[in-house]
Amino acid sequence: MTVGEKIKYFRTMHGFTQEQLVQATGLSISTLQKYESDERKPKPEQLLKISQALGISINIFMDFDIHTVSDLLSLIFKMNEQLDLNFDSQKDTNGNIIPDTLTLSFKNQIINQKLSTYVSFLNKMTGSEREQYTQTLQELENQLLNDNTEIHKTAPASNSTNNIPDSTFSDPSYQKIQNLLSDCTPQEMEWILKSVQLIKDCLRDTK
Image (tube, rainbow, N blue to C red; front, side, top):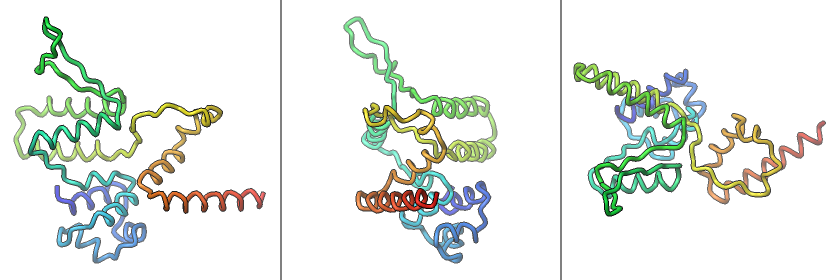
């Protein structure tokens, strides 16, 4: 799918009309229409506005071309840095890893469940007509991608959070705040914190 097709697909999936997405992003209707028809290529900052309005990852709109060993390894290294990965393998009699037995898996159950769905589909579609296979596979991939659940590697808890109930961090509102702050610059973070403190004080003063 092209970037324009993806914008239209996820806009429709989330029940947005073009007018509603325009209001949520500040884009003009003509600009959005040109994006969806692929007459114009959106800049990264515009894609970020669209992805945030739809509640999906901006990476959905990015193309990751893997042509070299470096391309692939850089992604694996990044995943190992930010996610909980398991590397497993068999060893020969000298204790050396047998390369062909090396496997990679995830500790996160959400990822494992989605990958299980994906692999099950691939197994079932073996032997299908190529056009039907490609179209159905694209639909499944988009359905699986439509999930912005936080899966970053869990950091060790600090003493300052020991007195905060676990339910606080599982609350959907807290997850939304995390997603909102994830790409902020230090200056933006400072402004947001000051604004939140002001709003909090005002709310408590009115009680």
